[in-house]
Length: 71
Image (cartoon, rainbow, N blue to C red; front, side, top):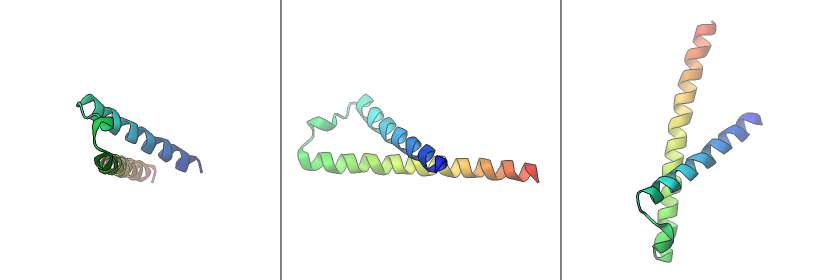
């Protein structure tokens, strides 16, 4: 359960990072038409999921290399 909670927090932080980066780039989500808001927000979540996937892949490789050194 602790690892699930940690990875959940990591994904939430990824989502916050993506929304913050979009705002910093000047993409104001609230100024878009309603249907486009849904599409763009979905795109942001997909980008956050891709970032999350990359982080877990890197973590798993580091962990595998660490476990090899213990053998």
